[in-house]
Image 1: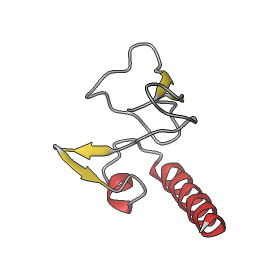
Image 2: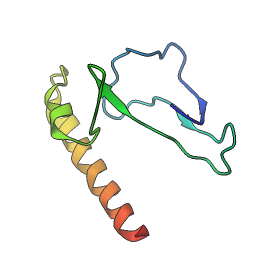
Image 3: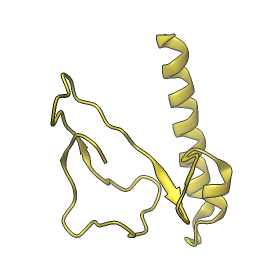
Length: 86
């Protein structure tokens, strides 16, 4: 994660995280001129769409309905934000 100002104690590469879990706080390290984050999700060494339904389908949490609702809410907010900025 590029430019993070903080990462939760104990979080490391390979940890499983759930939708809605804090994984870091945005910062502006290095030569960044404003807070930002380069974020990628990799599964089995290859990048995937973190808002894609296949990610939710792989969740081993029995509350997949709650995770799916969070995914849809996040996707809608992301889409609305992009359409307002372009």
